[in-house]
Amino acid sequence: MSVVANIAISMLVLIVIFLTIGVPIAVSIGISSAISMLLMLPANIAFPTSAQRIFAGSDSFSLIAIPFFVLAGNIMNNGGIATRLVNAAKVLSGKQAGSLAITNIIANMFFGAISGSAAAAAAAIGGVMGPREKEEGYDPNYSVAANVASAPTGTLIPPSNTMIVFSTVAGSVSIAALFLAGYIPGIIWGLGCILYAKKEAKKRGYISQETFTGKEKLLTLWQAVPSLLLIVIIVGGILSGVFTPTEASAISVVYSLLLSMFYKSIKLSDLPKIILDSAVTTGIITFMIGVSSIMSWAMAFTEIPDLIAQSVLGITSNKYVILLVINIILLIVGTFMDATPAILIFTPIFLPIVTKLGVNPVHFGIIIVMNLAVGIITPPVGTVLFTGCKVGGVTIEGVIKDILPYFAIIAVCLLLVTFIPELSLFIPKLAGLI
Image (cartoon, rainbow, N blue to C red; front, side, top):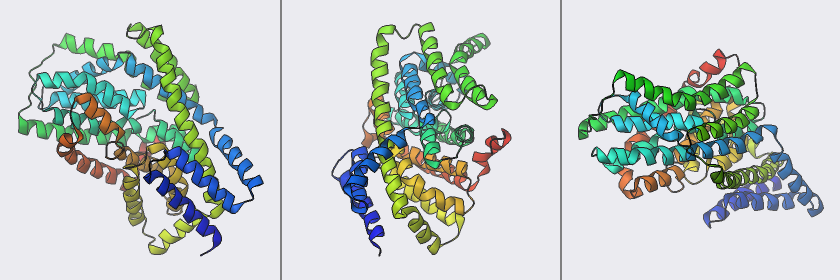
């Protein structure tokens, strides 16, 4: 084995060791990459190159969209928008078995699509729906399972920060195309959750008694229109060429702030904390992207992607088998690593492999985002799982039994999206972006 290959393996082993002993992900990636640079180059070249890669990795116009979308999501999470979306979802779900759980799922799809954050959706919608479901006799574990399982639809239905990160790492992949590609997979995920929630509700006898008059339905839907209009403005503006995705993120901040103030659910005194929280989140993401750029450079220098591609393609050239293997790897990775660093690490490794097999990069972007979205509801990391359980007042041990069937359904949805490319590519092709 060559010296370069040994250095590459050492870098990956160091990352695993650091993560195992509890070192933060960004620091683990940065130190491991810097050490590999020192093994490859003299110190007077390695250190300046590492510093340059941090700045180069963070210096992307498209990345400016992330802090704006994060800020917009935090404003919405504090701005009373969730309640109006829940009411609209309640009207749409109607009087049926498990209507409150179905309302929760639909509202998560709405809110996730607007805020771009699964954790925000689980907290905001779960906080509104939990007490209502408890009043109607729903088992809290059943309610939390439906909330947690459907919250990640917001990472697929645009806007999505993880798609922006993938676009940046992948290079020439259009953010607009990725945004549109996420709609059908996100809706399929949500529909799968709805079908199971309804089936289980029938078994448990959760039948809603609440009814609405025609006038009440129209009024409730009308009140939700201003919130939902943000999706139309962002996606419509990008597709029509009125503004770029980055400009759309800034518009989403202004719109969500004005809307929250119009609803009188947010005050100027609330803004400093909201902005500070958004800045901290943005700083973490940006730093992670910067240090991951060192690793990407080191991997390219040591030819890790090529070595892995040759190894995988040497075993089999069957596209479907390779995609299945990649799915399994990403599902495992997602259970202990957040989506952003996972995309930064594994996109340069897997993208060259799948493109050689003829997989469209936009389609692969949806595959990787969807796989890692499963990780945020899976222990031990499972940020959305922890958030949902905390909001719902239940333990993870208690909710696991109720959420396991959702994992099976999500796995089927993932396989459909993986092996039927048109589910991802149909809308981007229709819009002329592919």
